[in-house]
Amino acid sequence: MSANIVTIRNLSKIYQQGDINVTALDNISLDIASGEFLALMGPSGSGKSTLLHIIAGIDRPTNGECRVQDIDVAKLNESQLADWRNQNVGFVFQTFNLIPVLTAYENVELPLLLTRMNRAERRKQVEIALEIVGLADRAKHLPKQLSGGQEQRVAIARALVTDPALVVADEPTGNLDSHSAQEVLGVLRTLSRDAGKTVIMVTHDPKAAAFGSRQIHLEKGELSK
Image 1: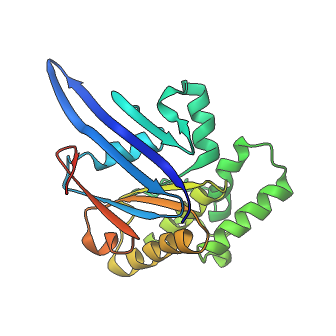
Image 2: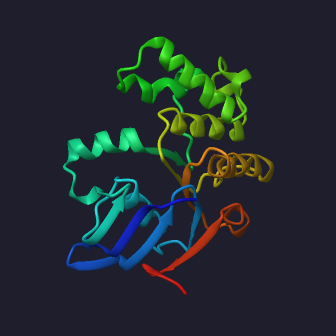
Image 3: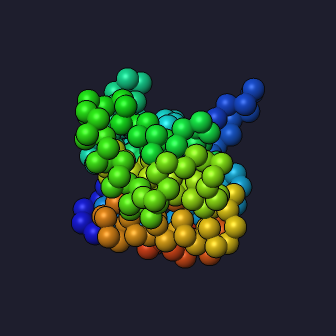
């Protein structure tokens, strides 16, 4: 692992619910190294998904700084932020979000349709991504023809296909059986160890977190010691 890919300083996030302010994150400071597989742990409502979403440019902090690859993402406007996400972040969520009428290949190709790649370039990227997750032989299958674990691996391939530096995963094994979860976590660990991707995963499962190279815990919006 080399320099930090994420630098967070004095980060807070406050949501307003009617007349009540709810503090989701309270003065967080954190460094994440390039190539790290970081597991964010904590109970429901601890702020771990909020932190993940701010790092990924889905949400904005109320105060503080979140720099990713030395860019303060909170200071980008919406158009700049959308472009930055497309180029730098791959998303993996608990629900696979695959389009049922598209094959595995077509689902993985979707993010590339927003780029200037030609068909041959897209094909190469999709084939590499499916090979990485071990599903090259399932390219023509529809989601309903795949197991849950295979669907999530297609979702990981879709997250990888643009070659992002950062892969964020929010409870990626929450809908999977134990065997499928192990397969998916193994893929994420390989991405970090062998492909040099930085993987940040939210989980409440200690067994899943054990696949990470580091674990941090949040409690009521604060990093617990």
